Length: 117
Image (cartoon, rainbow, N blue to C red; front, side, top):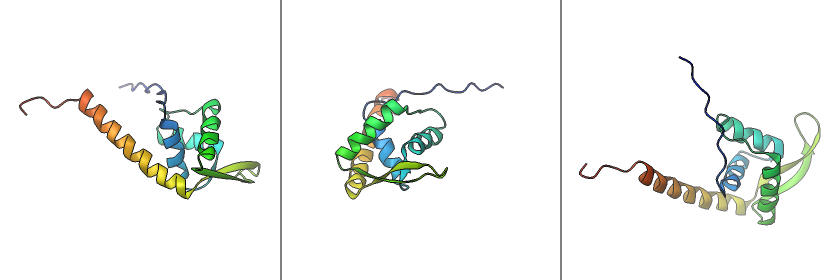
């Protein structure tokens, strides 16, 4: 049987911040590695383009949720590495909680339990 690969999914407004914060929970990472992690972890369903990633990273930095420093990548090139701050960890918990509530609400609407069951 030939399995057709699912199409890539466009990110909903606000989800990129959560994905970046969650990715950085594992430790500091540079931009390209953040994007690749999201792509791999989503089984290639999500792809974060540079034009979306870096404005989001700068927004998270401005809010104090992530910090940055220069270091060498695994390929020996100088790169800016981003890390989760203490404030970012708190925000990750809050954003994750909001996402779970939203996901539950969508599930209730899209897959309602039949009345009388």
